[in-house]
Every structure is written in C-alpha cells, then in structure tokens.
Length: 395
Image (cartoon, rainbow, N blue to C red; front, top):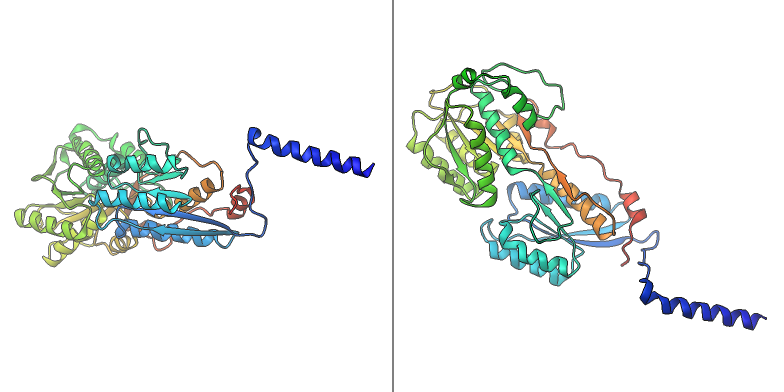
C-alpha cells in the first residue's frame, strides 16, 4: 500500500512539473528574513544643484529601505554636462549591460534618450522617468515623476506680478493671509489674478530680463512659454532684450547676468532665471555690483537694484531666500524625485504596481515659508515593511 502511495505521489509530482511550462512557473519569492538585493540605475543629466538634491534623496530612501529587509544600491552616473546628450545615452546603455533592476532617468533631451529607453524596456528593465509628466511616445515607461514645466514658470511669473504690486504675499500689493502649509500653487495665483481688472493689471509695472536654460530645448522652451503666458496679461511688465541661454549652469548664468546688467545699468528691476543654479549666479553678480535688491530693501522700481526670481529649489537657494537675497523661487520637488523614485523603483522590482504619473505641483517658496522645504523637507513616510512583505522578487 505504501509503495502504491509513493508511486502515486511521484506520478503527481512529475505531472505537475510537466505542466509548469504551460502554466508558467510561479515566481520565486525571497524568504522571510532575507534582504532583497535591488540595484537602481539613476541617470540624471547633471550631478550638481537640483540633481544633487534628488540624488541625496534617492540615497536616503535607499538607506531607509535597507533598515527594513532590503539591500538597495543606487548606481548614479551622469554625463559631464547637461548638454552632453550622447553621453547620457551611453550611460543608459551601460546600465542595460549591467542588468540593473530598474533605470531611473531624467532626460537631458527626450528625443535623444528615447531609443535607449526602448532598448531598456525590451531587455526587461522597467524605466522610471523623472522631471517629466508628458508621456514619451513609443516608450513603455512604468512611471513618470515630475511636474508641468510650463506651470512651474507660470507660478514664477505670478510671484513677479505679486512683488511689483499684485495681490499675494510679496512686495507692495494687497497682502493675502495664508494658512500655514498652504500651497501657493498655480490655482492660488490664478484665483487672485482673476479678481483684477484690466486697469488693475496695467498699473503693475516693472522691467526685467530672462536667463533661460538650453536654447530651443524642451524644458527651457516650456518654462519660457509659461512665464511669458502670464506676463502677457500685465502690459506694464516689460521684458527687455532677448533671452540669454545659461544652459542650466551657474557659471554660464553668471556670464548672462553680467551681460544683462552691463546693458541695463539704470533701469532693470528684476531677473528671472529659469533654474536656480543660473539664478544663484545672477544673485552673486548683482550683489558684487551692489545692485541686488533684497526683501529688506523692499520692492521699488527704478532704484538701480534688481530682484532675483527663479525656479527649482535646493538647500542652497532656500538659504538665500530665507536670508532675503532672492525674492521667490518655484519648487519642483527635487527631494520628492529621489524619495519616491527609490520607492517606485523598489516596488517595480518587487513586481508591485506604482502610479503611472506622480504629479508634484509647482508652488512658490519665499522668505516666510522657506524652512518648510529645507533643511528638512516634509515627505510622507514609506511603509517599507509592507513593500517587503508583498515583494515577489527572488535573488
């Protein structure tokens, strides 16, 4: 009898094994108590400024995960400059060869990296795109983490309007009470502007100049369009000269500011730089020439001083805002990029679902709320234990 039972059990096992190719073998799962190894390839276009901040929070999230049953490694590599497009493609190709578990990338230019991202997904490597919400046609991107660049620049333009006489929290116009934690996002500013008559809008006056990123590039064009779209409603705010391309770089942004100030020594009221690396360069130039307008000076047109407005937000720029040396900046959530970039990457490697898009609403940072963003940005905690418990990845 025992012999017959053993034979029956063996036959059943053989039959089950024979069925596996047809049914698809169940995925192996790492055993409880084992750390799960996950390597994330992170490919930013640069490793300074905002991307340094994002990289720091990729690492911090990994450290948090590694206390809870994971062994997450962030493999970071960037090209030598944000305009070295071919280098970024080569780095992505290298990540594919290394067989990382996931590639997170902030494209220097979307069209350039697209073929490499297609090859990554064809190799079975999920892709998370950071710094972008617009879908990349023809690429099966698992998740987009980012913000609308056009809206980010619109928020910055409204900060300029506010400072030079519009309603809000800055400058000389009508002051609006805001509750702590209120998002000064695009809706906040649009609601205020909707109450202004055409006559009110025409009374708001200033002369400014623009430092853009890479001339003709996707991100720079989007920000320029957003900034100009808002200012079209305010005919008293004049942009002098053409835009100067600072290539998202502080050194080049500094040179742009020098040229702008040399050409407009007596009648420039503000500079808007499309990124804070360039904005910090402009701030240093204006300060060195004793021509920087601070919040302590107050908003005043025609005083031969320039107010600096910019986009992005990093620990350094928050410090300058808290000191009153830059008037306002629009945050795009670079800490969020890294924090949630690691979270989504681990979840994807574990075979779990993630949001297709994660929208970080651009919002204004100014002297009164600066410390909500750095040195300790408010980020939601990640339940790594739950992710570990549901992880389907086997080493």
